[in-house]
Length: 130
Image (cartoon, rainbow, N blue to C red; front, side):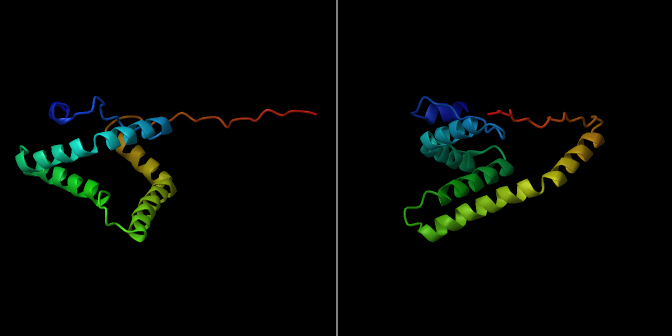
């Protein structure tokens, strides 16, 4: 982070992506948009000067991933395919929620943590009588 702050010309920091709050997703995307060039520079630096091979490989992979969306010659069909792939991945995660939930239970049990989840009660709508 220190290197990103030293390279960055924008006085904004990257935000953590919260899976439940849409406003934090918006803040995260705004920060990525503003720091896009600086992030690419940092990823290039890490992929060349990283401490170990795994770190270099991850930085290089992220750099390639970010650059897919940075092409000026990308056509509308390719952009649609990329968005469709992202949408399908999100739907797959949503549809497999029960499997992910069960896997989380198994992992917590194997770590010796009791899997307790609070149930959220169903919201009642107010009834207006005319």
